[in-house]
Image 1 (cartoon, rainbow, N blue to C red):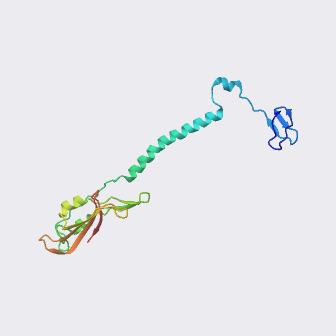
Image 2: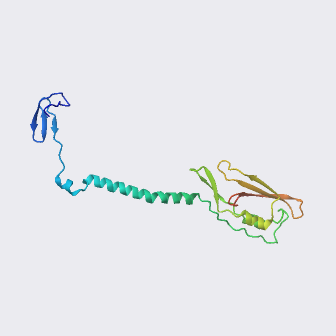
Image 3: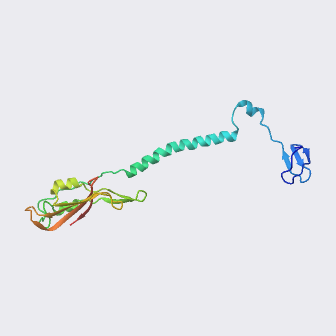
Length: 194
């Protein structure tokens, strides 16, 4: 410290103490840097703090490799379109059919299960689950008289179609009509109206 200045007061006068130098003017201590012991250098092992840091980083990376794929699979399974249909029960022939068009009966209409609507706030989209199958319904009651289709997604709702039966078995207009709305991709019934 002979040609050095004190960082606090600017003095150049120092005297030697046990572990370094001391400024004669303000008393600031300047300690000599400690040298690593020969045991750490010769063993080739990192200092304990470095070893601990490496272990922690390795653990974090291992956890990310485990949690990353699991979270992706969980997200993927939550967003997957599951098709769980409720079967439609055919009606009996003794029901009053004069209020219903075509092959429709009260029992068939009542057995249709409308899908539960779910909204995903992250993707801002709707999905449906647990509804009856439109294809099965069409096998029971025949093709509809008119079909109105929404080809594009609208306000988060998937493409849908609305089938309407309004003619009786003779081809004349019935007194009432039945409308069924279904999701086009899964063919799941999302609404019914009589």
